[in-house]
Image (cartoon, rainbow, N blue to C red):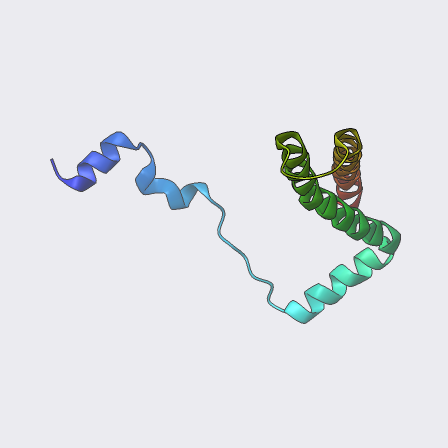
Amino acid sequence: MSDRQLTDRNIPMMNKRAQRFAEVEQAQDVVSTIKRLITYFIHEKTMVLSMLLVVIVGTLAGVYAPSLQSQAIDIIAGSAEGILLTTLLLIAITYAIYCLCQLLQGMIGARLS
């Protein structure tokens, strides 16, 4: 049996994969498309700026939390000095901020769309 026959037999519809996906469309006039998007979102500039702020804060919290976890592990292991309870409280606050930002990001994104 040839490789092609094995592929067709083992992965149904594999040879028709391109038919399942829509063809990618490109804007004919990119500049006017961008202008139209900007004019659409200019009325929602508060929401767009809020979304940007929430994304930045959420990303910073998501990046900072693992370093706090590492610090807590070092305190437990005895290789670093610090107060474990304070570090754990900072971890909880950081993850709460991260979760709140994710929630707000979803809500603002749904409203913008």
